[in-house]
Image (cartoon, rainbow, N blue to C red; front, side, top):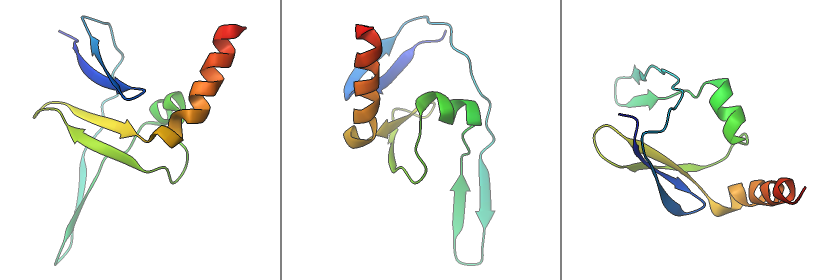
Length: 90
């Protein structure tokens, strides 16, 4: 049931039957006379786990009508890759 694809370090990785913890999030919309804006808020636990930075620019990719992929820039994850390599050596 829980399987799909996600991007990690610019590579497509397949998850097969992995137990995952979800965070239900409500989609919000603000309608104005001439426009509308849609909002998706990240729970703090998700933002902290992925180590988002304030003001970081991300890109949404549409996988299908059920899955969206959030892609971060290589520059945003470069410091995290260095930190991960340091942890693996220790």
